[in-house]
Length: 254
Image (tube, rainbow, N blue to C red; front, side):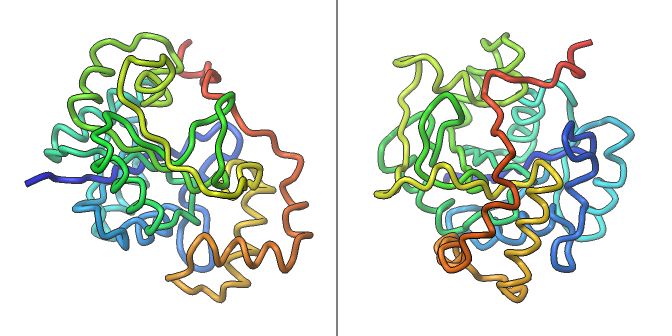
């Protein structure tokens, strides 16, 4: 029987907003918001948090232990290796990659992406590809899915710094290397920014959670409806520029 494991990556030494994964959002650390929402996905068998062996992430391990979240600690710069080792230890057949800076992640959308992965027979499926590729879902709902065999091949073959840091570009950046399936929405909301990478992003997400009255079961369409009712909200983080998949943290390659 297939074992689908969601691996959420996060570390305390974020370049633009250090410590963000334990920052409070409506009474819970952001890390836990992501874990709780991911656990609601029906097609996920287990949720694991993957952080680093750097001492700065000791509080992350302590928090996860206290809250009953399985935690794996691996390489700081080589996130692909961190994912591969976590997937191996937790016996994942299907790996779902999520990030701890997406507290609006939608469990239904996770399920749709995993379902597409299985239906299509793809090696890799996602509901978006990062710049310079196109996307239709808001930034912050990002979900990537791959087979263990595909992840293992990437782990063995990928050598470019951005491939090792961003985990899965090796699976989609060269056409024909793997079978790829992309989930698109009929309308284009790809310019909406719902992730937390800066102080402005954090302010927007806190405002959204406040208006949703701490509801644990809201969907991404509920968030979209809220923003369409109050379009001024998008001005909070309108000046933040998204990162390209080809960017990587040069601090990790000293």
